[in-house]
Structure formats: C-alpha cells, structure tokens
Length: 423
Image (cartoon, rainbow, N blue to C red; front, top):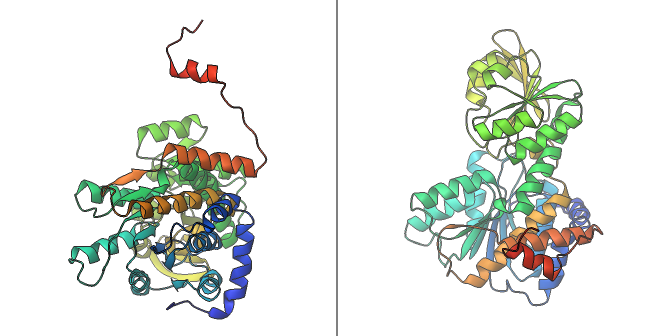
C-alpha cells in the first residue's frame, strides 16, 4: 500500500514503542481479542486523522484485527512520532501519510492522500479530515469521494465545536459520534492525560522548576482543570483566566486565583492556554509580561497565542533548543514560546499516557463498529456516546486494575426507580 513517512528505518523502534503502549492499554486489547475472530470491519474502509503516537498505533492494530482496510494521517504538524509512522507502514501494512514538522501544504496533502481510500468511516481529531471530506463531497462526489460515507468520529473538543457549528448551519453531510463527550474520555483523557502531559512538555522543553512559579492557566474546562491541579501539586501558584462565569466560579472555589488575562500578564511566569479559541494571549498581554515568561498552548490549534502579535512585539527571535524559541521584545524583555504555539504535550513530549488513551480509543473503536453496522442509516447529526458504552468501558478499566465495586440489590434498584417513602 502507498505511504509517505519520514524514515522507514525507524520502524523497529516504533514497533517496540507501540508494544509498550499496548501493554498498558488492556481495555483496547480485550476488544481486539473479542472482535478479532468475527472481524465486523471486514470490507470497511477507515481513514484516520489522529496524532500518530504509540497509543494510536495500538488503535490501528485493533482496527486492522477487526478486518478494516486503513489509511492514516497526522492531525497536527508537530505531533507525529516518526518511528511509529514508519512501523505502521512497514509492519502493519497501513497507508500512512504523516511526518513530524511538515508545512501547512504538506499537512493537507497528507490528509488528501489518506482520503483517496474513499473511506466508509472517518476518525478525526480537530475535524480537519472531516472538513476536507465535506469539501470533496460538496463538489458532487465527482471522483474525490466515490463511495458512501457511513459516518465519522471526533476525538477532541475543538473538533466537536466545529462539527456542531456545521450541523447548525445545515452543512453536516454524515453522522459524527462525539467520542470527546464520553465521560470515559473527557473526564480522564482531558483531565489526567493533558494535565500530566502538558506539564511534561513544558518541563522537557525548559527544565524549569514549577515549584514557586506563578502559572497562568487560560480556560477552566476539563483540560484547564487537569493542568491547574497538577501545576498546584508541583508547588506552583495558579491563576485561572476565564470568560465563562460558572467556570471561573469553580476555579475560585477550587482554591485558585481568578483574574483577567490583562491582570495576569504582568505576574505570570508560565502561561498555558487551553480554551480552543483564538487570540487568548495578544499583543498587550505580551508587552506586559515579565522578562523570561514562558508561553505554551494545550489547545488543539496554534491560534490561542497570537504568533503575529508576538512577532510584532519582537525585535528578533532565536532557537534556544529543539522545542523552545526566544523572542526579544521591544521593551527589552524576553519571552519563550514552546513548540511554535502548537500542542505542547505532543510538540515537546510524547502526548497522553497510554493508560488514559486506553479508554478514549476503546470508545473510538466501538464508535467505528456502530457506524460500520449502520451502513449509512444514521442521520447526519452529532451523536453522543451511549451511556451504557461509557459504563462498560469504565467497568472494564476497573477490572483491569483489580478494582471491585458494589452492585445494587434488586430492592435498592426498585427504590431508586420508584416513589417509595423515604422513611
């Protein structure tokens, strides 16, 4: 099968790393064993646009074991692990189009190459693949997309926001299952996964001591909560900025300072954006920052920290290391940008731990099975994950950890479902 990766000689190392992740993803491996014999995805073409990491490699192996024909591309120019991409191409026979450090043009070329499979099901992270599929479909299926698309999945908050906007505008052409909104995804992957891996990326890129630092977290959704907790746990003084009153109130009652970005700009040592919105840190904020302030982004796209504004405030910049750029400001201060303002946990580290991606990718796999079985009969709207699926995945994860929980008696179940007197 055709592929485009940076260096095929890295395949052996990539295989070892996928094996390591697999040893820490028992729920997904159990699903592979369950569906490996019946092969419910036989004859189903699947195109994925996810970060090409060792954990993604385990998902690809599972889809393949269930019978799927697969192509894959990266969903971020700096998130591909080249050894994993090489392993998927060489050892799994997957059509992989992904390399770390591609240009914007190369990034979209890779997406279009993966689309040539004419997928029945798309798996996306950020909705770039889904949007490109829709552009092709809107041309009238004139050879760009030749077959029926049963549906797609979406992994992240940013993508779900884009797809719900498409639905509202009447532009969504096939059903999407929002994996991101599963509790076993956003309450674990977003909170514990990004919370740990974002700080891991900052520490790897700078080796600064977080203890005693003033860390400003922009946004207090699931990702922001996870980062704030872990930064505080490492001894940082955390300030949260927000635009939503309820989220800001939660941050305040969780013990963090809450301020506007304008107020926080002059006191922060490290800034981490998590909002999914553009222009969270702009020119005036940058001009007011301390000498040596560090900027990092944990949202999907590199628009939260305004790079044009950063360049406008600077007299020049230079690379400090592979992941960190120093900008010399016109006021004489220096600020440091990690990973070009892209996802810090993947640009400067290895992404989420395998243990939390186990649940997220179990949801992805089961969503693909549902879409494949539907054969295109589902309406073109954004669907939530079934509650029963969420519960089953959580129970499977607990069992893999050797944890038992209580079970309601029939009498308790009746009591909860009825109108019995409290006495």
